[in-house]
Amino acid sequence: YCFLPFYWGASQLVHHDRIKPRSIHVDDILELFGDDYLYLSSVKFVKQVKKGNLSETSPMLNDISGVLNWEKVNSGLLKMYKVECLGKFPIMQHFLFGSILTLQ
Image (cartoon, rainbow, N blue to C red):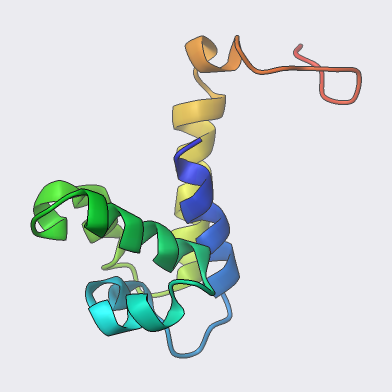
């Protein structure tokens, strides 16, 4: 579930013309736009909880910031969520399925 705020947040930023993935390294942008965009809010939270350089405390977020646009970030996070969460039986065995979404 920890992927979802980043995935949804990247979805919010897909068509943003000024905030780029590399903007997560600019504290002023996180402060100004953190309340409006879930991805920035999530990065801001990570930076508050983990002390130190983002490249050391959260290397995956740091690597993602090097991607050129939010479309690629968004599609990459979705692929990662499918593989790392939805594709793992130990996780999905606890997922509640019903008549609309069935496990087959």
